[in-house]
Length: 157
Image 1 (cartoon, rainbow, N blue to C red):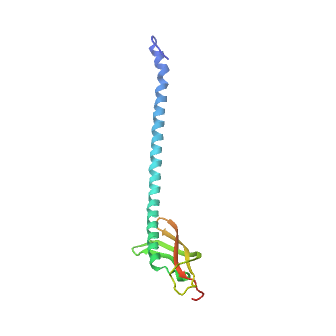
Image 2 (spheres, rainbow, N blue to C red):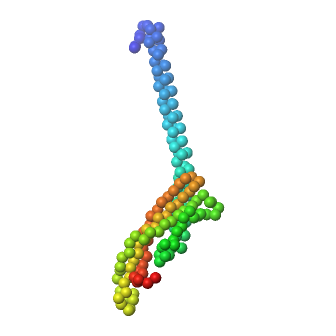
Image 3 (cartoon, rainbow, N blue to C red):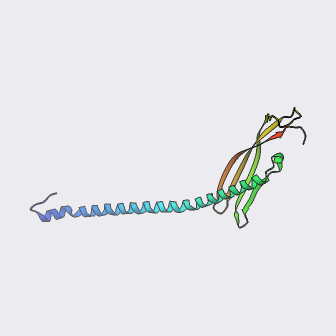
């Protein structure tokens, strides 16, 4: 309301306006504060999860390295890596690996055997490696396909 000649009436009608503006400013400041608190709390919750996943990934990589050193495709039944401690200084980081023969298929390898009549095969394995970090309750699972061959196909062991 625009008042030209009646200043007391103008003051009476604008008295509540300051209260409304103040309440709006306080409401906006509270909303900004809640948003900032929520974002910082989420960051604090995500950070340990990332640390745990990195530790589990490191354990899985270590397990893969040990797997490549010890895997014997001719004796897959004896292969087992279960709850293996990755680092002596950190007993909370563990890994496990499992191998399974998926497929065996014959291949022709010219010149591999001069006697003739010998068939060779390639073997495909599925390797499941799991890195576990018990400190942060994190787990990383990986599946790999590993081909091995050519191997003579015989009935002898």
